[in-house]
Length: 285
Image 1: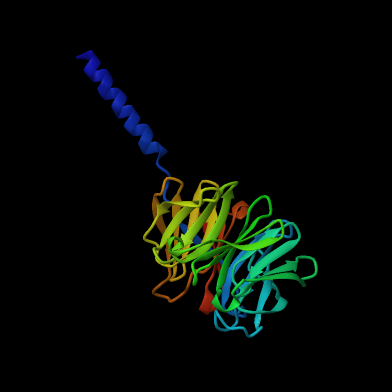
Image 2: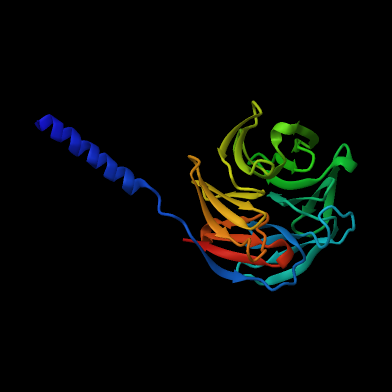
């Protein structure tokens, strides 16, 4: 009998510990928003060194070769410091930073911009420019740049100054958001199936972490899990184990959630609202 009660108490204790270990649900609290002088902001990227937010403005149609796209500089409190820091781009979207270079997609090419001068220093064209729709950018710790093409099911890679179609095919399921997290791991948001997936860069095999997120766009991490935006107007938090919770839903307001950023020190999620022409910042609590 004593053994029976001992087992019972042990199980109850374990249940309590498991209950306590369950993470507290997160919520987003609005902190600020910019004015509406931005022009179709598609992505935002934080530069830790300068403490500046870079914003890619499409300023027109998402696939127009019109040269009207530009990059803005915005402070961490939502003040637009330089609306057209660099211009003459074609519907710029994803961005990534490595050392003194800002990489940004430009429909059919990748552009390298000097962070000191704002000048484009080099470009890499897709092998077939007419069948290219480059979207997101992520940079691994070793400087390898990965670029998604979510219209033509491709991932490009720039490594050791070699630019190539690194992976392609229907198994990519329209890749949009990319995030390099480990030496051989790339997080991919596949818009066709609304899923966050982990890609092993050595074997090129996928593992689905979570799905049911519609038009997956931006992917950022807090070091424990992932914040994933749905362009339609939602933000989700996905734990490392695949548990998913919705943190934001602005679909009724027709406010998009494009390629988001997370500023860890401030616990801020920065959301480009696309057609609403502004950034909105939320504190994660």
